[in-house]
Amino acid sequence: MKILDISMSLSEDSLIYPGDTPFSRKISEAQSEGGVCNMSRVVMSSHSGTHLDAPLHFVEEGKSIDQMPLDVFYGPVRVIDLGNCNLIRPSDLEEHLLERPQRIICKTGGWKLLKEGQFPQQHPALTADAAELLVEKGIRLLGLDFITVDRAEGNFPVHNILLPREIAILEGLQLEQVEAGDYILAAFPLKFKGGDGSPCRAVLLDEG
Image (cartoon, rainbow, N blue to C red; front, side, top):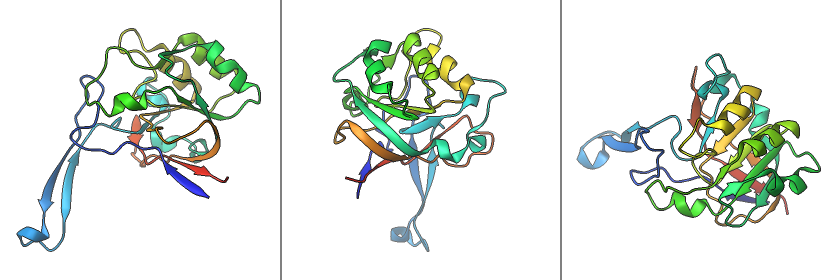
């Protein structure tokens, strides 16, 4: 069995959503300076790097990340390769949803943008109709190889369609080495009490 790491590395150079808190890490104790151990102080957003959105992110009374069932974040997942698709429409997804998978990850080439450090004007996203299709097909988790499933402008229709239905959103996936197909996903969030989201270490298990 192969374990494929599909997570972004967190650093000061990590791509962030415009206006969000940049990642930073400072050494608080170092053995090289006489400390008894090495420790760091980390500052970041709850949506830094590869992360999960909880319903509370867009739903005032929605479930927080620690209230979501853990089986959402672990289990069979279908990776769909959409080429260099910039806007994912229902027609891009329909044939891949015939067997009604519970979790899907869309590979679009957006992973290339994660390495650039600057938020681009054009990036992969879903249309509202595509999000409605996912609801209709019973999807429990949507993953994408960019740090948001919505365009930066507008009223975030995809988040506002999926999260009230308690469909988890997994963003910021690094899919450079991943081929289309069926895998086992493991992407557990930190247990932030009352959290609207959380960074995670997302991996795909390839059972061959």
